[in-house]
Amino acid sequence: NAGVMQNPRHLVRRRGQEARLRCSPMKGHSHVYWYRQLPEEGLKFMVYLQKENIIDESGMPKERFSAEFPKEGPSILRIQQVVRGDSAAYFCASSPPGIQGELFFGEGSRLTVL
Amino acid sequence: KQEVTQIPAALSVPEGENLVLNCSFTDSAIYNLQWFRQDPGKGLTSLLLIQSSQREQTSGRLNASLDKSSGRSTLYIAASQPGDSATYLCAGNAGNMLTFGGGTRLMVKP
Image 1 (cartoon, rainbow over the protein chains, first blue to last red):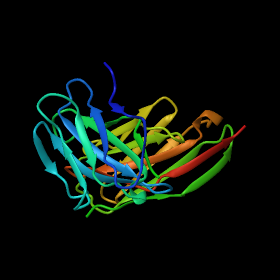
Image 2: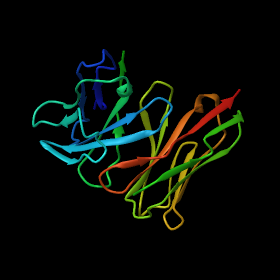
Image 3: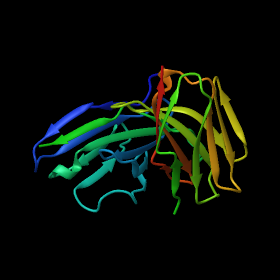
């Protein structure tokens, strides 16, 4: 059973470009979470999704950021018109159904904005 | 709003010592508490999950306890080894998300 798969592992973008980060949850997991870790800071919740539904996006910046988890395929975190402050590690986690499920994290996608 | 605090922020010990990492949370209505390990530049590895109905969990040299009434969890590492050097994160699950503490950076010196 493969773990949570994230790609790309490293992404470099220039200011104003778009960044797309992908996450495939563990087999059998229907819940996906995105977290952001800024340099020298802790992990901050961004968004919680189930298939075709955004359940909680209270941690998402109001502009430029969006997330989806389609019926088929990976979850996508999309950042439009990136700025230097978006440089961070973006982690995806998945869990099985149920509110007490253990979360398993991917290796992260490290975005650098030049 | 759940807030999670970890003390100390950094810890350096000689190899072989037993040590305790502390985690406190403000909202006792948590479903579970999870401890993770993060190595530099890497993702998070789940170490232990304690459900709200449990008081502790053990895995090898690791033991984690949970006291909901006082809002505290501790991670006990026995006979520490240099390979234990990493950042240890605790996170409380109060529904839709895990709320993370700032972590404890552990250095075990040979």
